[in-house]
Image (tube, rainbow over all chains, first blue to last red; front, side, top):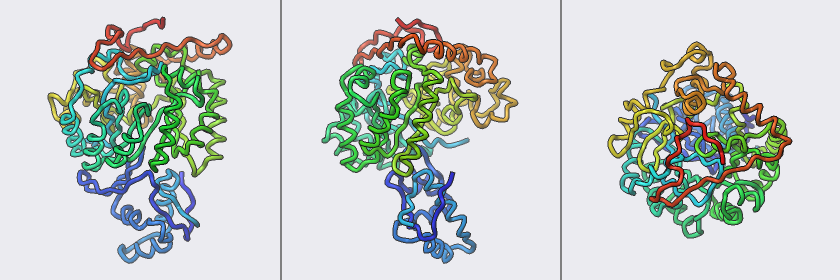
Length: 93
Length: 380
C-alpha cells in the first residue's frame, strides 16, 4: 500500500516513531509501536531530511548533492509507503 | 541466523483483572519466583546486544512490578523502543509522569467493552472508569496511545461503539483482535468464538470506520484464525523475529510455547544469545526442515510457517503437525467442528464465561494441577 506524495508536501516523522542508529546491525532503523524498519543509507538520509520544513522537491535536491543518482519517484514512493503505515506524516501538500 | 527484533517481557503474572480469555499459563504458581531487577537489566542488555530493538513490557500487569520505572529507564538507555502493555490499573498520574520521564515511548491500554457494566463484567473487577481516565491522562501527557480490545462473542456486536470510544479518547491506534484460544481462553472457547454472522457485521463496521478515520486513527482488526483458510504466520516464524521472557526467566519463541513438551531454556542458567542461537527449544521448529506434509511442499511454507505450533499441539497432541486451522491440514475437521458449533448456538443464548482465577504472586494457584492446554477439560 502506498500514498501519493506531492512535490510540495513537507514530510516529517510521525510522533509514534523514532529514528535510531543500531550498532548491532550497523544500520539506521525506524522504530514504531508494531514494527522496525532497517534502513539503508539513502533511506536514513531521506528520513533525516524529513523535518516538516523541507518540501519533497527540496529533499530530492539535497540528496542529489550527496549521491550520484537520485530518482525523484523512488524518494516519493519510499515516503508514500511510510506514510501509508503512518510512520511519516506528509504535512500540507 | 536471523536476529530478533522484538522481545515481550512478561514481568509478572500478578494481575488485578480476571479476563475469561487470559492467555497466561494455567499454572501460575510455577512462575512466582520472579526475576530480580538486576536480572532483568542483564536480560535487557543481552537482548540489545543480540539485536532486539522493540521491548514490550507486559504481564500479567507490569505496573505491579515496583521497579517498572527503573526497568524502562534502563531499556531506554540501551536504545530500545519501549511499549507498555497494561490494564491501566495502577497507572496513577505520578507513576505515569515517572514513566514518561524514564522515556517510555508508547502505551497500550486494554479495555473490555465500550461501557461500564459489560467491561467490568468481562474484566471480572470494577475497572472501566479507571481505564478511561487513564487513557485520557496518557493523551494529556502527550503519549502515543493504542487501545487494545480482545474481541469475542460478547462484545463483537459493540465494535462500532468501541471504535467511537477510542476516537473520543484520542487513541492513535486501536487493536481489535479476536481471542486466541490459549490458556484460560481455551477453556472458554465455546463462549468466546463468534458466529460467522457476527464476523460479517464486524467486518462492515471496521470497513466503514477505516474510511471515516483514515489518517486519524489506525485500526487493526484480527479475525479468529478458526475462520481463516490459512493459518496465522505465528510470531513471524519460530525463533525468527521475536522472543518472550516469562516472569521467572524462561525464554520462549512465543508466549504460549510453555505448553509444548520441549526442553526449557532460562536466563538463570544460560545467556540469551545461547538460548536464541543454540538452544534445542529455539532450534526445534526453526526454518522449514521440521515440516510435515502438506506444509513441506506447500508454496506458503515461508509465508505462514505451518501456522502455530502451540495450536497444533493443543488440538492434535503433536506440535509438529500442520496447524489444523489450515484448510489443507488432515486435522482440519477439529477446527471445522468447533466453528459449526459456534454457528449452531447463535439462537440458543449465550454460553457462560468463566472468569480467570488469579491468586496473589507467590501464593499457590487453585488451578495449578490442571493438565495444561493439551488436555480437554470441561468448563464448569
